[in-house]
Image (cartoon, rainbow, N blue to C red; front, side, top):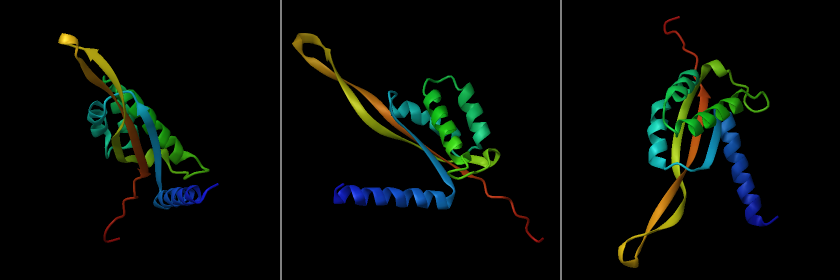
Length: 142
């Protein structure tokens, strides 16, 4: 193993430890063959919502992009509830952050007039969902 791989591994372990200390579970769905703009419209619906409410919204949203977002959300919740990882209560989870980044693009050629060609880009997305436990409400003056 080279020196760079050792550093990269230690940085990754540090990020995982930092997330674990903050009580945040993460799930990433990479290379989803839907354009990022279309997926962002769906992700904006669930950001900041409770886990159960977000799953219900995605279940009844009639957009193709809702399926991979729901799978990523359920995966993040399963990671949070796993006793070997965080062991959080699934009833108190909420969507802390949900981000859609642009993935790779497939380039296709489309013939046009006079022997020319036009490039069509088929975009893909990376969906990142973080869930955390809502802090318990404390009473003031007690």
